[in-house]
Length: 371
Image 1 (cartoon, rainbow, N blue to C red):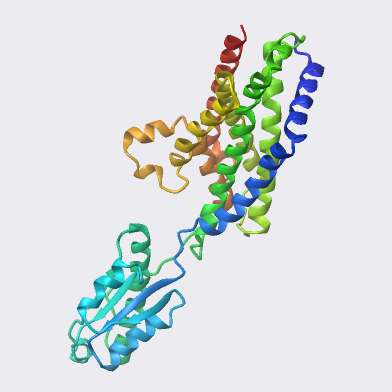
Image 2: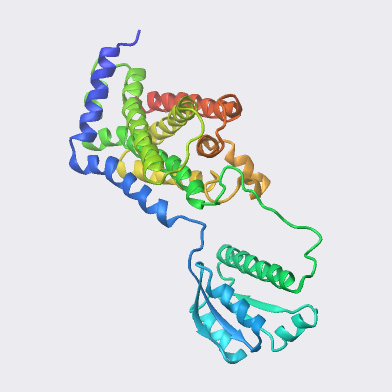
């Protein structure tokens, strides 16, 4: 029979060890909130300031109208007017401009004659993601310009008109996609660090042998070590979720029960992994390195920044044992899509399996290291 009084006493001791130390207390509370605010603003796919240069060889009205369309966009910032082809490369190579708009000498004449008029857009492609976003912005401006020219001349438009409607994120704000993911990242970091250092801290301070001679059984020690990390992770996640809702105003369209079911199962997995690392670590430095050894690939393979579907098949198979992969789907589905509890069951049960397996392995490793 488990003695819950002994377990509660150990849980209290763990909380005191973490919270009485000012440095440990700050690490648990301060950095996650700072990281959420910093990442929430810095980690974005939006491009709000595209510096560009214009090389306009045409002096007609249509070329001026096109340049004015770029000037009038809040996204584009004209920093230079070029007078020769040789000026283009130095501007791009020095990163002074991201984009160069080059208009040929017969641009207006060709439009007046009803002929196709070409516009060259030269983009710095060193960052392919930024380049594609800037190119799409430029295409939108040129498409609107084409529609105005056709309307002025009374000509028929294109045979098919594309009307875009974005579900779940109507304004395509990347922050709505990024911030829920950061909730999962920070919850994993805090929970894993607290649990990965718990047993290692005891060994390093020389108090682990004292713990072994107490009436506590191995399973009771395991539960006592797991509970603080679980509760701290739960509290940290609640605070981070509140900041995401109240400060960043990310919509939440599902139920609290659905979100917290996924959170509890994810914390179970994270605590199990943390205890496995802690049981194998002799010093806190080893525990810290072990935690980062797990966290870095877990974050990369979670779908936080890059879709899992775009990864090679072998890598996709590896992600199946990553609990953060499933929690990312739960977070974004509950925040943006309003997914029901039943719809997320395929994400719940793999985390439950990972959590129970990691806890069982942590228990086995814990007993193996004790005796």
